[in-house]
Length: 349
Image (cartoon, rainbow, N blue to C red):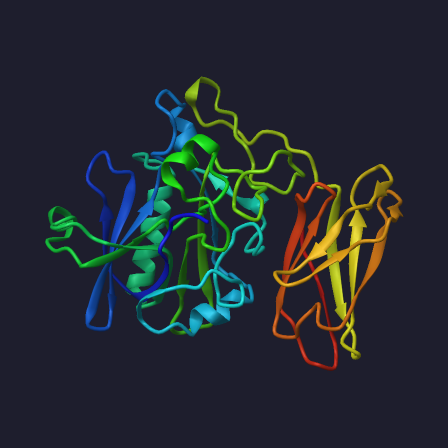
């Protein structure tokens, strides 16, 4: 398990500014009642080996300004302040891969900062500025640390005693990077959430490094192979950021879920390919359960209805993952739940 002091910080945005030159972060001061905390957010990678293309150091990011996921209720109920976070789904921990927080194919890459054009730091500053003006709550999930003496004095004129960093995905680092940082693990990813104080709207910000893998094992180490359900890779020819590279489409998708009155559920798995799909060794999983799919072959473009026994799906909302015979994630969804009398939901692609 990675060496991260996994924690959550909830409060109000006081100030934010770019870190001093050579430090690829955006710095923030967060007020939480009578306490003040320091938060540092990566806008560019410093993990890459010397000589790597500059464009490879730009971050994958996703901003969802109407975020919906079962985890939101837990985050909303947090009290102001900085506290340690247990590393389980049930306790509210985040995992970009196993927690099905979002569709990684929707992530994009922007330059970290660029005068007169779109940039990651520009987008973050706009979001944080609006949240501060609206007095929105901010929840930052990451790694707690004790600040060094005078660490932020030059930028803010003060330095809080404690801060939070690693507000990004913390798994899938290549072996050479993980050997130095020891951050790979599961259920300890970072993210930022902005909660409107006048509506139920939530904005979620997810960050990851281009060098990180989107298929990982139970220890957060990178797995070989892809399924098409990963963040896009970019053309970095000449060290410049180009267009996303073509990626294979996933062979299958979870398309709908119907929870019946008796507590059981019907999950529809669709073959999205042009060839028959053998499901031998495939599984549907939750954080607490796993179902081996029957040795069934689905015809091209056809659905398969899978019966999930009572208790596999919960009415308060949860997550479901589709894994292939290699243990790689082919699809992952979150469902909102519903009344005990039964409910249905479909999953958009």
